[in-house]
Length: 224
Image 1 (cartoon, rainbow, N blue to C red):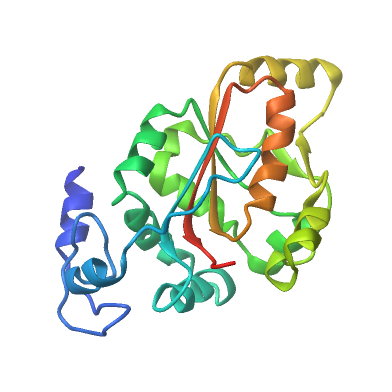
Image 2: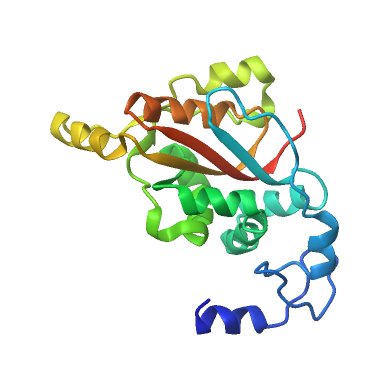
């Protein structure tokens, strides 16, 4: 931990959940007090979606996290990225995936969605989690899609089918990009998942490029 990070974590704050003042950082999580972290930061158990090698969520998408995530994405409050990244790193399995990944890829937003929101919430998380491993240019969205939260399972899969591809500026650049991904462990980062359809769709062009292992970590999983 840098001196600056240590000083930052020593600054008291009002807990974003219980509003207790003063609160102090706990286990690297800044913005939520120790009592609330211990009471609410429980990782959900669920099957790994078919089409990924591993997938882990830090918390369930319910109270109190749902309201905070909505603030993060739609207010928007990009400063909450540090809080959520801290929550994710509480889980030893997520820390292991971050350590073992060759490349960390935040899920890209369509240009229209990025302009509307003003920032990519997955990229903001990735900068806190593994800044030195980020590749945010290889994977792109080929089209804007409807919000997944409005759709059922089958509609979610149709909605994101073929919605991701590798950036292809030229055939030479494309072949070089494929070579750089071949045999690698790629870790996808996103904020919320339900069925995992978006993550699976994002993984498909990476597998076709020769990635050996593709895992994913998210802040929260929404109950089916």
